[in-house]
Length: 200
Image (cartoon, rainbow, N blue to C red):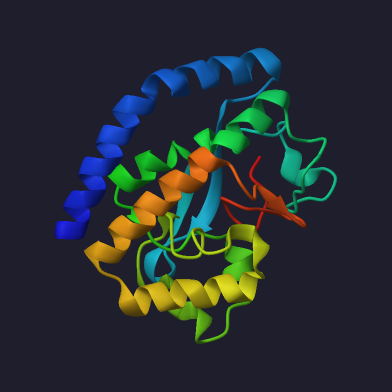
């Protein structure tokens, strides 16, 4: 109950504060490229329940069917000019707050991933689905994309075993510092702040 209240207060407050920036971003996306400024992608949530994560579109429409598909790297030509700014500031992830308000996500938790990756989980790794996925988590503040995906899963499992409000607040504070610091946006073929698959 306390964690849900925390999520609602933080999500509602952050969404209100970010609304002017979101409006400006939506207009900029529409001016630069055709297609909806909002991007939805099916993800796997708590206990394996699917849901659609909501984001601002940072790549050309249909990017997942072009080039490297779900993989994205620094300099990817499918990323729009506005999209590069949104990714650098993590503003493209702000609509995730709607998912938090709907109860599909939490502020803190393992980042949600796509079904095809969940299908490859070992029995131990499926423990990652025991809690709601989050906008940011322990793995994101401990190496981001500088560490292999398997190690990120282990960090998420450690969080689930040790999670508390004190740890959540620590992760939130470190996440804010990382976003405004802007370090480590890309390593190899995966987005750092976000998830292993591409984020059109």
